[in-house]
Image 1 (cartoon, one colour):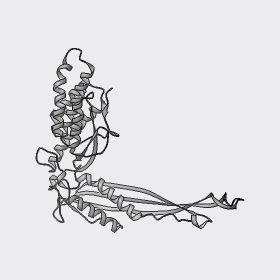
Image 2: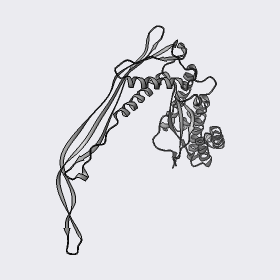
Image 3: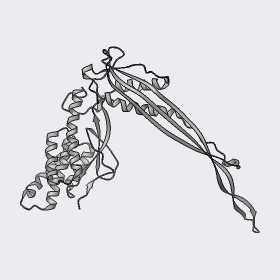
Image 4: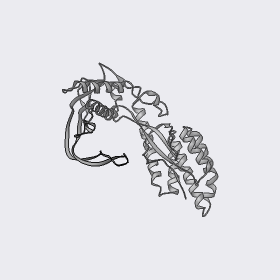
Length: 347
């Protein structure tokens, strides 16, 4: 029976810039993927300024503005510039809400505990269970961050992007009131300010994807080529980052298997081995940026195994890979025939 190299759920890969090491024991490989910015700022000189934010929350405004400036200054797209004056685009914002509220709820009930009940004739301590009234306490806090963020053309004031963002988080701690002093405990405090800072950072992360390239980690499954040892070795090479070496092993399987698979009434295992090797090589080529060759391999593999839905998803991902690389090049994030922008800094 065919088995697929896998590790957890499948995430649709989009645009690879590098492999990640992993300790997972099963057969999946991980790529760090880079997505282009939603907004192409090249017409505005790829330059941004961050205006002072409105609203009655100066601490939140200062944090958000500082984080946006840091992201712009250290973007993966090195052609992006942070400017105080003369920037082509200006980021504007209003802190609509940055509030934390909490309450303590009390619920009366019955509790029980073992208490000493004297000693028996042999001097052994005896215990009994007693019921008593107690009160359970719950400290419940809710943090809400609501921000209006936008991008406008500095010279004309034209609003290009305007988006409302909201993040909310609930947190609870518990305590107890009891007639027994050793059980009394107040619910531990909740750091509402820290929660709000986290929510603000999450909103900055969402908004930054409009103006800057951003990364995520995705998982790609490979096939075992009907238990061919070369595909096993190829998988480990892919996982270590040697895509070219893995491609060579997959090609060996293809070259050896293709003649038998092309014969009249080929053996089913032979067809399976060839299709899976083609799929693996298509993945390796796609994540090297050789899209035409990758598409050719994947299309051929799918023609042989049309019911493999994951292969169709991978074919779509490789085509998206190429589209996104072209977008990154237009935006100035890459200049050569590569999409390796990892050295540009943190997204």
